[in-house]
Image (spheres, rainbow, N blue to C red):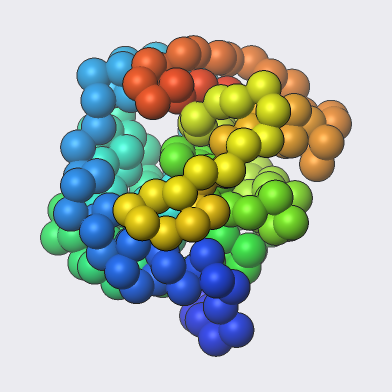
Length: 199
């Protein structure tokens, strides 16, 4: 991993680096049973040794995956979330999804969970390309689904939650990816997609 310059924040990155990220870091430190089942099934069926979560928050997903015996890494832009993830023993780095501090094809599985909903449509393709760049074999997207792009407010902030058909968005960025697993994980309409991306 290398250091990433955190200057030149977008409006949305500023929210997540500071107040909104701090708020969510306090409430997102436990995975649901559905998430635990999903990661357990994925880890047992598909062979991967290393995993990177982009937007890892306090590390709940990393904890589940580490229990499956894989080596985990996380990146997040919020220092409070990273502190909580480090307290759980996870190796993490402060970075934005648009500039991941990893070499190309250096991690077996790269995934997002509840990250893309906070990336405005103008930046979505560049974030997805960056996720794909780092992934050696698999990409997973676990995100809130909407058949059309919608934007809503969150915690009094305008236009910070963009729902979309993220499966279709990813296929535009990486049309050669093969969807190999899918699950509906329940509230808040989380859909999980796993793609094979390496040869």
